[in-house]
Amino acid sequence: MKDLSNENIIHVKKDGIEYIQFKRLLEYKDKLTHCYTLRPLNLKNKSKEDTDYIKICNALNLDNKNIVMPNQTHTNKVGIATEDSVSTDFIETDGLVTNVKGKTLSAVFADCTSLFLYDPVVNAIGNIHSGWKGTISKIGESAINLMINEYGSKPENLICCIGPTIRQCHFEVEDDVKELYMNVFEDKSIIKTGEIKDGKRKYYIDSVKAIVEMLLKCGLKRENIVDSGICTMCNSDILHSYRADKERAGRNASIMSLK
Image (cartoon, rainbow, N blue to C red; front, side, top):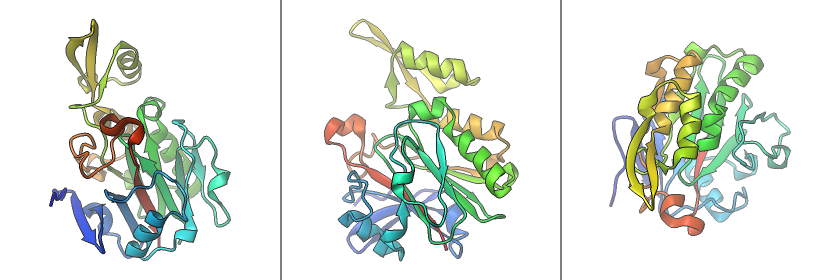
């Protein structure tokens, strides 16, 4: 069986389900529960009553009734989850932050980038869905600024763990998307020129490198930026990937909850 464990990741197989966790965030397991789900779990339904949400919550000792999730429309909007928040509060929203213990934040993915934000000093979290549109509009920066303004977070204390995502090896685009990245990010090495297919030049984008550039400019320390190093397309046998499965693609979920 495939094992995605690496220097930053632990691959857990428990009670017939599988998920990964960041070693860095496990340093705070007395205060924080987190995971990124793997197949065969499929959270495409985006309902906390879904059987697969119940399974993963049981494995993590969480109450699925406490899940709140944004509806995810590739914006850079981040919401604040309070004690009374429910998922329907967060329309056209792609990330959530909270400092409420027991409030479980979830988001779903099928190639887009998950950002796990944690401030161990003020004990606040952020769970962010950063698709290519969200990356270009810097949803990660929006989340960080919200944590600064709402909870008094300091960028130098923030930890950001970057989950599985489509990597440069498979993130093929054309001129339109390439130009958007070129206009926003200074590090041009995020773009690799590819071959011509059907008369059109192809390019390969390193969204993770772009996100890291954004995080550093926000004031995060490099040692507090942890990359899973996992490509969803390369591992589509164990991770849901839209590029691999198109409309049939399921969804992986990122889950975070304060104890």
